[in-house]
Image 1 (spheres, one colour):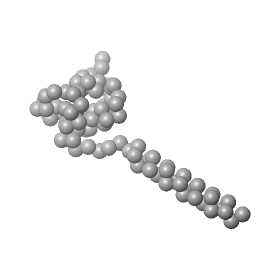
Image 2: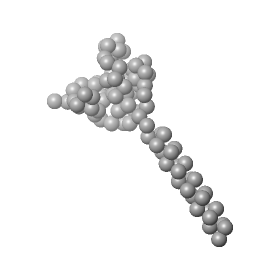
Image 3: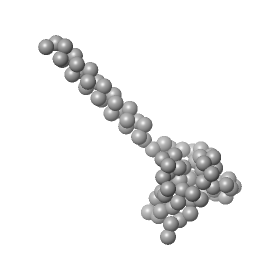
Length: 90
């Protein structure tokens, strides 16, 4: 009887630990403007660093997160954009 209690406690600890680890890794990464630009340039989604450095920080962050999540499109301020080039979808 005592062994079953230990098994249940161990399973509960593993379950809670697994949930917390999943929740931590699932968080959207907050990137700096430079980090976002580097991700966009390194993944060949845009070639001109000077042009995209004039974009809003939040836009670049959403774009870079979409690239990291391997998405084809992303949404910023209610408008859809392509990850390739950052152009708006009409």
